[in-house]
Image (tube, rainbow, N blue to C red; front, side, top):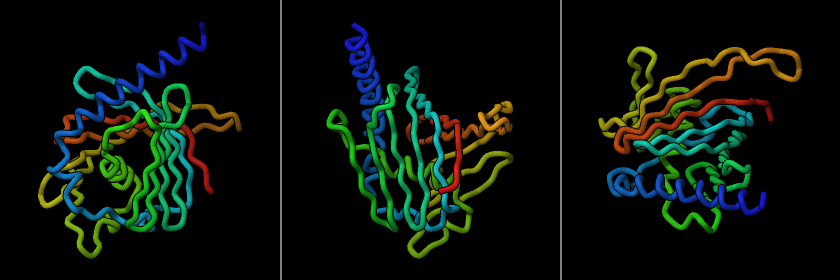
Length: 199
């Protein structure tokens, strides 16, 4: 019975994930499908592995996932897991090349570039947005960081530190919470950093 319940739970979560992806479909053609250039992962601080929880909120729907992000020399890898810790999606960017591996349940086109843009906005110095062919602009408004493409606001980012957490090593650290708002989608992604370690 437990295995059936687990499988049903995973199935329902994947269906919710499908609903989220479907809600993104109206965004295709406006931004994702256009020939934009992403920054080079080489502009990200190297070399780290970060484990996080990911809450995706759209209208009244909420999805709880987890992720591992690895930043190495000229390479960015993002792996997204379902609530049971099973891999749903593997995104890899080397230079300007992006490759995606996804579970067979994920049959729809995914907003991969949006996900990567959120990571770049959060972790990359502003200088990384200036490259040949770039049409990006990063602005600050109070504690908010705003990403624009061709004067169109794409993502807004705010970050806060959660209360101090005691780690197994008997030290304390703040768990950073990043709130990404995707304007065209009216979508919020809340990312809580659980652990960051050097590679």
